[in-house]
Length: 219
Image (cartoon, rainbow, N blue to C red; front, top):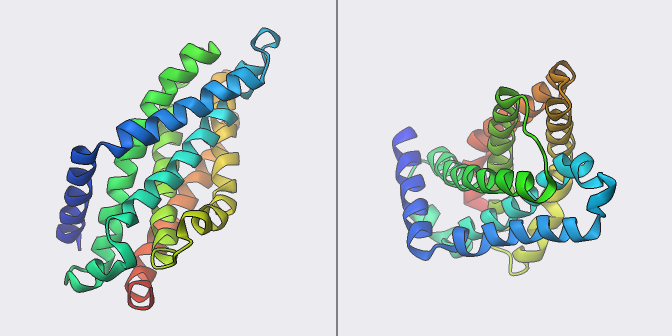
């Protein structure tokens, strides 16, 4: 399983490095979202700094949908995955790893964007990193799982956001609360929300490993 996961992750990442879709489209899209939020809110009122955690994770969630759609556009209809002979659980983990690495790069860029555009002073670095790790795993695992469900449907570009974004609501809420607590200098308030992020990531990773083989057969 892990050997196949590494093979799939390497393949997806090589494709992205050659096409540069993530760097040329997904990252600029997320940065444009942050800039639009900056225009929509009055910087002089301090609303940007207060809303920065939520705006940051909204941009990440939107970009996660785009990254997931891109991941499954590489194998239209899922036929290549079914005929590859690779372990289905390994395919799931490999695609999730590739998406997670792209999201990690995106979060690094967006963090710098939040600091520059919104004037946020980063605090609680360990908590922020923990939240980023748990959220990234949860976004990648759930995105790949729902991406396979919609992979063979002609309207997957519009259906995937409708299915995935409501599922990501707990992630968005928890990650926002963790960041708000860390930036406010009250890290103790972040503990229950950080635990919820870890549970979400673990549940969707386990669900993907168990359900992906059957979903590949029927998708």
